[in-house]
Image 1 (cartoon, rainbow, N blue to C red):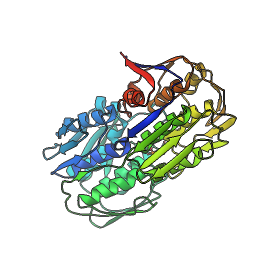
Image 2 (tube, rainbow, N blue to C red):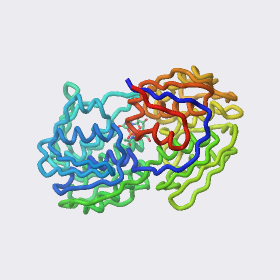
Image 3 (cartoon, rainbow, N blue to C red):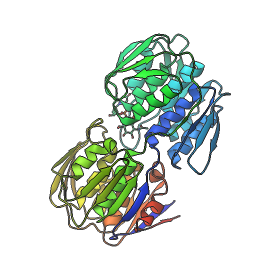
Image 4 (cartoon, helix red, strand yellow):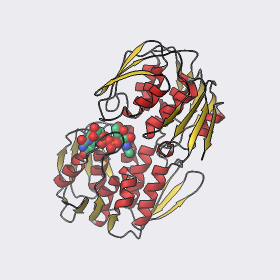
Length: 418
Ligand code: UD1
């Protein structure tokens, strides 16, 4: 099993180019099967979530080319009736994104029920009730969802919660339905607008993404395109916090500052300086930062749940006490016992964490339990005194391309060891 070995205490300095967002690339890959033409996505990171998604797509008959410049080309002209085998679906929750496009393209989909995961229950009831409102027949048997869209029709749907995945799935499921489908109470995350832009470039007629009402006017056919997805706001945010924790002077290139404004606004209340210009963000930090009184995770444009653990890592060494409330997922404090091994002072009650900043964390052997939690332990290790070993880094590989190389180039002492 691979691990990161980190010698903490070195300042970070230099530049990072941010690649396309994992959470955009995954639904966009699924959307590639909406056309028989070839589709190319550019600037994609080499991460295991994308590799696993491509494995699933190859399994349903897609031909995939991936080069080392980050271009992925999908040819789905020969896909057969969509069945996603259980072993593959279990490895990647995002396989659920294939439901909408498979139902649009081949009118049938059989996919295993994705279970809960490291950060919570993650039900798919909103995906399923929306698909049923489109008159798609869904049988739930032996852990499989067997769906038939031969009688699907446009509808007006109100989502119970603004779920990102359900909004995306329903957009893709209704793209060919005659008439107008209206989705209300949609998620407003930037990845939704990215999906709308991508589908419209392929010939779809969708409007409203980024607001809570999305209108999809059915079209007959989509065609192939080349597209560069939006940059990864969570990767950018993670390295911004790394710089904030390590007396950094770091420039991020190829980002959309607006997408992480909630993080920038929070950090601007500490002694950390953040400068934004066009597609660049510069972070300058020196010494110990002030704690933030309160951080509540919320739907976009609120503070993202995917940045909560990195922010918690920063609070462990800030001056003062911070209250963090996780409003999106039930079990997103699994990394807390690992931070405690490093000397952090944290109390968790239900969805609230109270973090009393200590002057220094101490290196320890810790274990990644999920993607963002694992990355946050790396940040803690960079700022800690002594050596930190982060085990089970396959969780980090799901979403961070070569994290040790990126950080080593900034001056961190970090090695990957098998
Ligand atoms: C996406 C992101 C994930 C991020 C999350 C919230 C991708 C690939 N993943 O996940 O990184 O943390 O948004 O910003 O884009 N819910 C239900 N029923 C459903 C669906 C969701 O109750 O059918 C609940 C969830 O349990 C959760 C909330 O709605 O409490 C938000 O989940 P959702 O927006 O669907 O997250 P994902 O799309 O799974």
